[in-house]
Image (cartoon, rainbow, N blue to C red; front, side, top):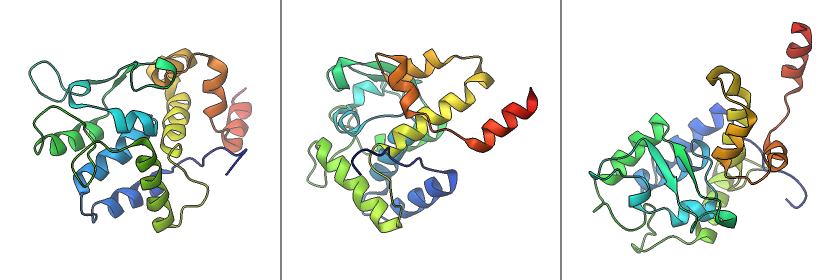
Length: 191
């Protein structure tokens, strides 16, 4: 897929993804992987590096935000991402089987999953579902596009989306956002 952007994930595609992983040998873990990508905009390297202290509050409960530390973020662009309710529910289910420390996403052998393993996990998922043009970056692109399209509803600006994405420049954030020609038509009609 060189030179092309990852396809965004529609609501119907996300439902199929979650239905598919519900039947996997590790359904709780796999649901969290999908939701970290789509509902928190995390990169494969960040998903692989995420530890329980980054998602738990000081009392050991799932926090209101994810603290993506510089050490796991691209170009040390750590950030705080508010917790989506679906992701919170999934993390609560996964936390039930955890000691509250170590990696959130463990390999089948029990250790950390490597970033390439996360990338390959998404490749296998999309292949199984027949989703062409999707990659491990599809969830992140979906998150950024959805946030940009809804920022007016939350009273935010594109700068807020940039901060959630962990981008150093607004231009990088803008490149992630998929255009919507029907939306453009509606926008012009409103003028």
